[in-house]
Length: 445
Image (cartoon, rainbow, N blue to C red; front, side):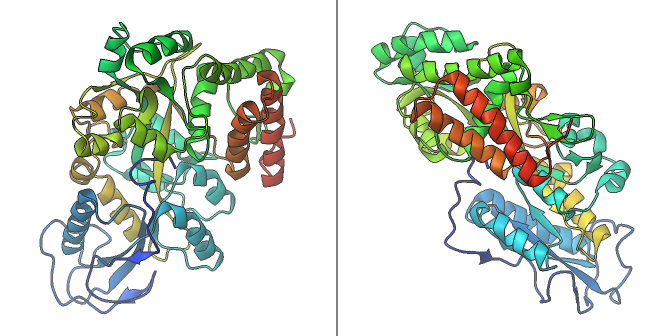
């Protein structure tokens, strides 16, 4: 959950929106359709006439129904139904804040939807309870499989099984106010941690704002922290020979040293006046960048919407790679679609999912953040972000709840408890392994 416009959604409840006529429950069949195809070519899974019973697919969607892209998607889905008269889509809009728990409840009750949105943090969790359909045979036969970035597909594999397909990508970059840097006599954004630290006082003095913003609380903390760890050649959990995972920092003095350097970087950001607030959530971070309350932050292409809403305040915002230490890295949030094992109609569910992955759908709905390599917007919100995809890192396919909470708590220990960077690194290594042990993901190696 990266804080993009989809994640900032706070619906008051579950808004059920049907994009079709008719009735029925998930996984069931409706009465025969009296009309024929309105266009398009029938797939192998389609019927050949009005006697074909219609399959109803339940589709749970976490988008904001008020957005234009949602309205465009509904229109395209209606066109899909017209060209696939044997398939009807019943869609519910469910905010991300509610979707996880609703999915878990439905899975446990044997009433999961056929298709849903998800988050990358859920891939390992849902795979561990064996709730996701293996999409490998469908993907292998898909004519457009070479159009998806390979590292994106790898991010959705668990034990070599493809358990999701990419809905969109939330790649992160450094977003900066060019005019603020120029006021400080800085001609280019920082490329390294040291350059960022050095710019802090200069920007504060010249522009009157803090140089950098971070998230200190909430879901984006681990997404930022994993980047800085990767930039210092570290993983939060390594896959071991037995196929399970372990954090190895406390077993390797060199790794522990590099982990401590990451927390020293966070400490320097505060101690040397580069950041102001240490407790912002992602909504405050995004809003305050748009309002020019600070000069730079790690952020996503969802900020394009804020640029449209506040063109004057963001007209000087530019995109650059995230400053790094040992090697470039960014977080690549691979937001998945899932098909559930409980579906009675896997072929039709794949037909629908692959339709949403086709180029026409992606061109209209995800022009700046598609997982297709042939859909890249010419705007900076598209091409400049997608150029960073080769350096993208993802979370391992483990149950992440306890791990990400420990990552959030590690900043609290650094900033609030005033623990040393070395002690925070040691504590986080142990806390990650404790969480892996509880979830059954911890390696015995």
